[in-house]
Amino acid sequence: MNATEIADAARKLTRFGELGGLKLFIGVFQLVTLAICSYYFIRDREQPMIKYRSWSINLWAVFWVVVGNLTDGSLSMDGWVSYSNLRLCIFVRTIAGMLVMPSFLAIFLRHYFLLRLPIVQAELLDHKTMVDPDKYKLIRAKLERVKFLSTEYAAWYFYLPNAVVTTGIVAFLYSRADIDRIAVGYPTPADQTRSWILLAQIVVAAGWFFIYMRTAPKDNFYIKEQFWALTIITIISLGQSAVLNLFKTPIIAPIIGVISACLSVTTILIDIAVPTYLVNRTRYKLTWTPRASTKNRDGSSVGGGSRPSVLARDVGASSSTSETASGVTGGDSQRSSVAAPAHMAPRKTVSLTIPKILADPTMREAFCRYLAREFSMESLLFIEAVKQFRESFSANAAPGARTPENVRAACAKMMAEFVTANSVNEVNLPKKCVDRIKASIESVVDGTIDPDKYGNIFDDGAEHIQAMLALNHLRKFQTSQIYKDMMGIK
Image 1 (cartoon, rainbow, N blue to C red):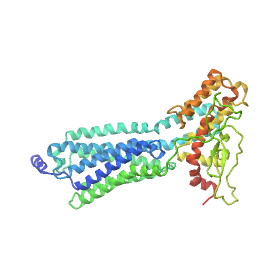
Image 2 (cartoon, helix red, strand yellow):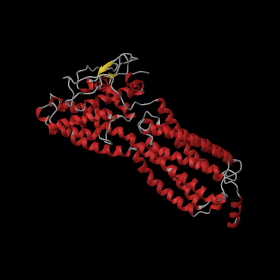
Image 3 (cartoon, rainbow, N blue to C red):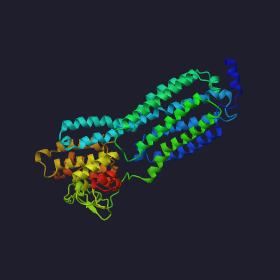
Image 4 (cartoon, helix red, strand yellow):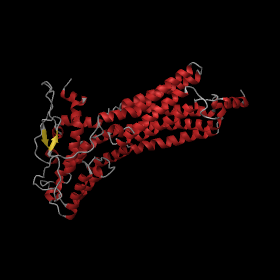
């Protein structure tokens, strides 16, 4: 057919695709799913299952999937799209697909650095590192880089250059493409370029994913399993598109269309519906309210004023067991190992507390590995840093080390590393707790705090983080495979 015949054929078409009703149904279903899940994603964006999945890029990609499917469905319905609007609809459908594909590599890169984060944090927990300022500084600098590359913002930095360049190229080509050839199903340079770019996107993303996932540590949020499923589904989708281009027959085209629709629905469900379900099934506590009150060992507060209620009992894994929080805040609570000896049958139930875990080397190492899978190593780093701070400035410390200048410098370092917003090992402390810490630091500057209480400045924060660890992780740790392997439980 010459150009005139192709143009006449395009103008006579009343629809520009197959299975319009099915595509529209799928698009509407996906739109409703996106609307519902978007609410939960935004509301629960601090929950680990959402937070560590690049939730904003996920919603962005799903939005363009929906736009592409609804546009394709409209093009495939009789009389829904006039010839005068054909170029616009094909352009929107094409750009929608181009904006989706770069999200794979961006999300995978962010996830790689997220898995690297607890590995670097574990290096900081090493005792030799903590007492060696130069080594600590080097590892902390590496941690700052990895921490930034593991954030939601970094995922967008990975995404935007890729998406802008590739989408810009395709948009330019389609703005000049022969729309009549596209309408009647004839290949164009724009179609071929788009296909090669999409293929390159998924090959690079899937290749990177397969490489780093071979040796990647596990996490407890099923992120790896979801990424595997999404990658395989995308590869299958590209494969069937290649089959359709090679064998475009009246029999194969509808079959491929139905399979594509089913895969599209599956992708959306895995990408946003499954995380929403898992969040509502296993919700992490992000705040903790003390239900009992204690005082410092001398009966007074850290900052010199009245002290609000703080943790009186360590939340244990067994309701029948409680441990005073002084195991973290400087008291003399007894610390006992609960690891079962090799010659004894493992106990089915063991009462655990955070101080007991941290006091037992075997248990502590296992708990560190568990927290690494939960991306919560900064909590343990904070507790250890508070312990070191207390030892450096307690009443038993060397008098020459307990000068106000040294205390202020150490406090500034603690605040910069753990308390300040977006700090390298930021922990989730409530505003009231942060205010009490700041008030105590101010009392050092003013000289109104008893020097014997210098070491207790961050105790409130340590108590809160210990309580959050107990509430969110203690029972899960006891049911984890890491714990069972350590205890010899089959």
